[in-house]
Length: 201
Image 1 (cartoon, rainbow, N blue to C red):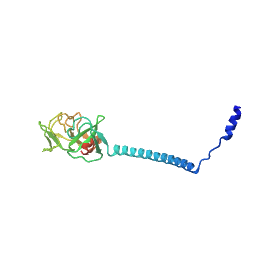
Image 2 (cartoon, rainbow, N blue to C red):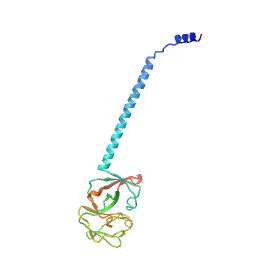
Image 3 (cartoon, rainbow, N blue to C red):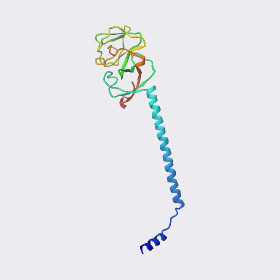
Image 4 (cartoon, rainbow, N blue to C red):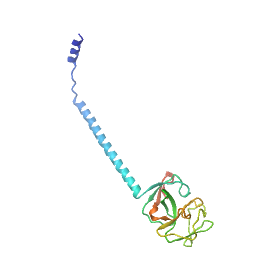
C-alpha cells in the first residue's frame, strides 16, 4: 500500500517552469553579482597600486617621520608627525632629519661647510662672528658642549643643534658631531599631526 501511495504522489508532482519575470530577475541578480565582483577586484587592485606608489614616494622623495624625544621643543614635540623633503638645500634655521646610530634624529641647521661656530657661556651662538638670530628659542644654554670653540664646520657637513639647548645632544658634542650629506634624510617642511598644529614646520 505504501508503495502505491508513493507512486501516486510522484505522478501528481509537476515541474514548475519559471516565468519570464522570474528568469529576468535571476539574470539580473547574476549580472549584479558579476558586476560586484568586477568592481571589488578593480577597487582592490587600485588600492594596492595607490599604497605601493605612496610607499615609493614616501621612501624616495617625501619621507614621513614621527617625532620622539624633547630635544626640539617647543618647535616640535614627541608624537607629532611631519613630512620631510629629500634633496633640498639647507640654510641656517632649517630643520633636518638625519640618520645616526640606526636612529633618525631631528635638529636645526646652524652653520654650513667652512663656517666658524662659536657659543658663549650664556648660550648665544655666533656664526662667522655674527650673532645668530634665533627667535624659535625659549631659553639659551651652552648645553652638552665638549668641542673646542670657535669650531670650523668640515667640508660636506652641517652643524646642527636642537632647540631645547639644555638637553639636546648635537654637534656641540663630539659623540654626534657634524652631519654629513649622506646622513641627511631630508628637510622638514610640513606637520600633519596633530590636526590643530597642521601646517608648515
